[in-house]
Amino acid sequence: MSRFHHSILTKREHEIFLLLMKDYATKEIAKELGISEKTVRNHISNTIQKLGVSSRAQAMLELIRLGEFSLD
Image (cartoon, rainbow, N blue to C red; front, side, top):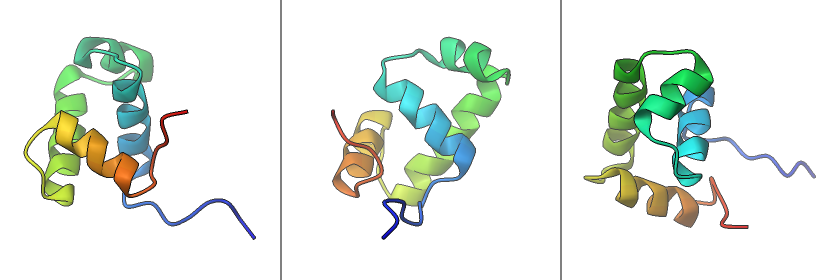
């Protein structure tokens, strides 16, 4: 059985939130992924909206709760 499940996140959203979980700032994420800070913020906003939460922190908690990320 595959350990992968269908993600509610796009590949890019997943990459961004993985870096957010590692305490990267928006500017650092943009540099790491070779995209603009505005694009990073747009992806974060889209994810927050998709999850029905109101902040990055709540989005991260919800993604952990949903099994998208683990704390190990």
